[in-house]
Amino acid sequence: MRVDDKKMSDIDNIFDRAASGKSLVKKRETLTIDYVPEKLPFRDQEAAALAQTLSTVFKGARPSNLLLFGKPGTGKTAVVKTVVDRLVKKSGALGITVDVPIINAKLANSAYKMLFEIAEHLGLNKEEKKVVHFTGLSMGEATDRILQFIQNKKMRVILVIDEIDSLVDRNGDDVLYSFTRANERMGKGGFVSLIGISNSLTFKDKLDPRVRSSLSEEETVFNPYTVEQLRQILSERAKLAFSEGAITDAAINLCAAMAGREHGDARKAIDLLRVAAELAEREHALRVEEKHVRAAQEKIEKDTNLEVIKNATTHTKFVMLAITKSKNGNTGEVYEVYSSLCRQAEQEPLTQRRVTQIISELDQLGLVSTDIVSQGRYGRSQKIKVAVPLATVKDALKDDPTFSDLMSSSD
DNA sequence: GATCCACAGGAATAGAAGGTGT
DNA sequence: ACACCTTCTATTCCTGTGGATC
Picture 1 (spheres, rainbow, N blue to C red):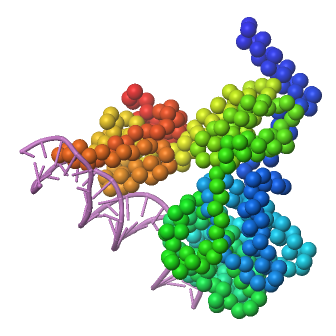
Picture 2 (picture 1 turned 135 degrees about the vertical axis):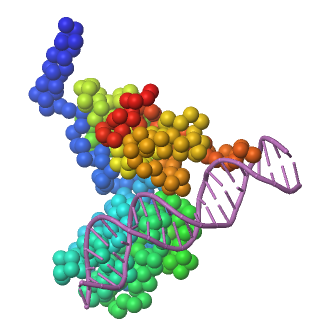
Picture 3 (picture 1 turned 90 degrees about the vertical axis):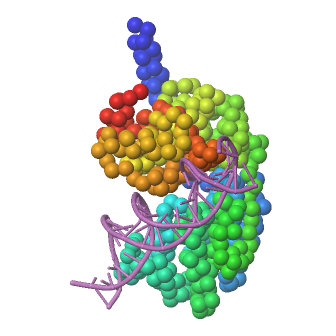
């Protein structure tokens, strides 16, 4: 009876809210990462410096290459986006055409796909037939075609490569070398400037010295936001996003504090805010409170982990399961458990070498934690532990038919 | 102190998948 | 039709090593 009452009143609440046209969030898009506010608080200096560098383009010259450093969520991409936006508008007004493709190297997933995206942005594939496809050509060939195109059209290009460190990790700096060298080969009229955005401060060490000096003609470091700065950013954003009184100050403060605990990550702070709002709306709360923020934190973590495990290859899943099932978690034991799981599922186990590699991949993703311990005479091994709740692993694996038997068979 | 375990993790390479130009 | 491209997964072969036990 009571349950029914509660359900009825819930339904009433939904109707009431809908009827009064009131919901917690009034402008949802302002809570996404893609949304870039008009003015970025606490980043005036950096924006001005960037604008200064790029302004060279209006004098008809090539702006210096530029490297931006900073931890995730410190506003690097946002600053670039706002400045570039203004630049493009201004150049339109002045009748100077500047092309500013913004490419995310990490999302592109490979150097080749990145080149393909650059080609798309610059319109190579619209102008002529068959210029750069998404595979098949050699890297050098694809790069040459892009540069040739720029040269022929005398284009002014400021190429922004976000997460440039992941590009270099995967493919080395050959592509960057070609782009930095391009200007020497290019006649008058056209040019390419590079703006690299890097999360890693040690990124420069991985570069060939020639590329390094050329790429970082200028550089800017973005420092993490302080908790107080995060709080201000959030409350400003909340004013835009939420209806009057739909979120408590305490909730905002908590978001700021949680995101600040890591390294002043504004992206994370805003993610928290958005998910907290979603959770609050789902339970038809009158406003977003601290408990929603806490729940949001858990949900975000769980969702990303869930996603990663679900999309892993079968053997990676086997390894993950083997780690949860192994007792003391050293490599030999995990491999034993893994092999027997494979046999149960009638699959050929991979070599140990490959399994250690998979384990270190899992480690990098933060799904497991490893610790190298030496037991003297008894060898040297890793101690591997799962770093996510067991329930998350089970949740992720239960949809995969290969694992349904294994999961139910023991514990 | 020397030894020696039980691995860690680098290097080279293969081959399949999804493509290219000529 | 054929040589050749990149990327990803996986294998083979290999050298390196921290510290408890001899």
